[in-house]
Length: 304
Image (cartoon, rainbow, N blue to C red; front, side, top):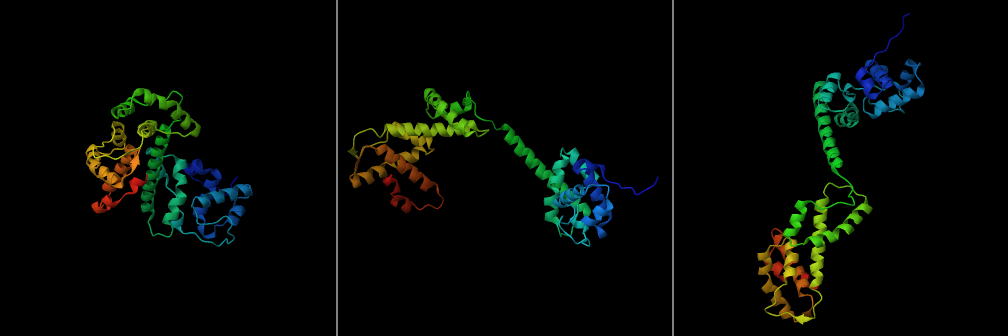
């Protein structure tokens, strides 16, 4: 018994499906008269929905420049619009650890980019492999980073390195531990995964320590500024936590005194005002091209 025989790529069948492999092979050998109607007439032994779905799938992947709704059976195709990796290239990709499904998923965007560009087949093979490899490595990197992210647990504790940093900033262990229940509860309710809980806690602890010491200095009676006023030890610690150099802080004390003595104001929060003044001055000083006269004339910190 004899009859017409159809062939297809085993690799493509494994990656996309048998029907897709048959349709793609038919297209490659019958580009002059290829259309959806010609497929239906040729493969009457296949269900019409199978043919249409395969046609749409291949078209979406950019394997032939044809829309599923096109009615013009005379539409022609250009070889440069229908790049599909050879079996040798697929083997190379496999040897590099790239999955076939991932490789096939890259075809649509690759073909779209190189559409209408004059590029030889062997050059496309090389560029496609580079393109896929770059995207594969990027995906591996993202997957690795995501795999390291975890939800915070009830028993989470800062690492010894994190504790050492906080202790060096004069935060005591009892204060650090008092922050844990609220910190854990907050992030548990957020249900956010992270691979940097120590960094998040460091930032939180520094802010809470600064707030604690900030409040301590606001409970004194009102009094005017004096020419021998100095910031409190807690005030200096707050600025240290804010990464302001001590020599910079000390250099600004005379200027701060002079301003408020001239202003004649009384306050119970001189340390708080000094913190605002130093932070504002340090920010201005850190900006490139900052003018010294502009910084001296700026009194925004005094309004805080």
